[in-house]
Image 1 (cartoon, rainbow, N blue to C red):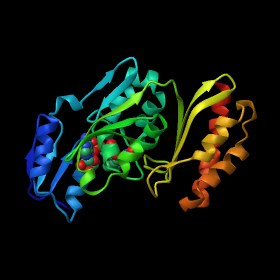
Image 2: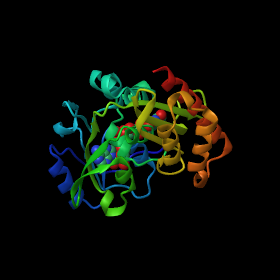
Image 3: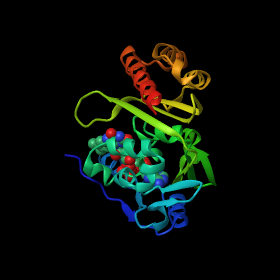
Image 4: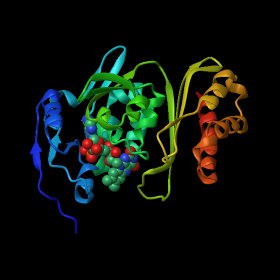
Length: 277
Ligand SMILES: Cc1cc2nc3c(=O)[nH]c(=O)nc-3n(C[C@H](O)[C@H](O)[C@H](O)COP(=O)(O)OP(=O)(O)OC[C@H]3O[C@@H](n4cnc5c(N)ncnc54)[C@H](O)[C@@H]3O)c2cc1C
């Protein structure tokens, strides 16, 4: 049975203190809810010398709501997001996605920061956040900046070392839907997923974002599919036409027929749902 080796544990109380540790320690790892990190600690060859826990950094916890945007502290758990009245009112699709990830005990440990900053291909929230136009507040060891989720996920090497402090969602009145498919009917991570968000205006939609998690690479933005929905009257939306656009968008993605079939079926459900609203 794998056991943990020795490491130094740090509990900084500010982001600056955590960043100073990240710069100073030989092989540090950031610990949020620990649902990934504790597993990798048992397995990794590049064993960390120092574990930097974020739990005591108060500003990283909780949800801050203003008239224009909602900021979710990176240490906010998936359970808190799923049950937050603010998130449920303004970003219902995010609350639903958080509620469907993992299991009840895991959702009470797993944080939104860990979900995004892990940069694992198969996690649920990044595609939903991209569809909602969210930004990541990033305190890197070199610079502090605000990035789109896409740009955040693309950071590598030294650029990717730092603390994700919060996720900021603009209140732009988007309606979203999220579909995920798993290999088994038990609690499982997705093998493919699609997030869609748009603003309904009479018989048209504006600001369409259609993002696929192929789970084989970083999320893929479906420009052709979004354009199809944006330029076609809702009453004339046809699943077969949308599916053709989706297949065009995903031509380079090496998705197998099964995953493509799942996504095309999702488009049909999505169209039905939007026609009803
Ligand atoms: C059995 C099981 C089932 C799961 N099912 C799902 C699922 O269905 N859907 C899903 O999306 N996920 C799933 N997960 C994955 C996991 O629960 C989530 O991705 C979770 O959100 C990770 O958050 P955490 O707080 O536990 O991160 P941690 O394990 O603490 O950290 C994860 C990574 O992110 C880094 N990190 C964390 N927070 C920050 C930060 N603020 N700044 C910089 N770096 C940071 C850590 O250094 C580490 O590399 C599952 C995990 C398990 C073990």
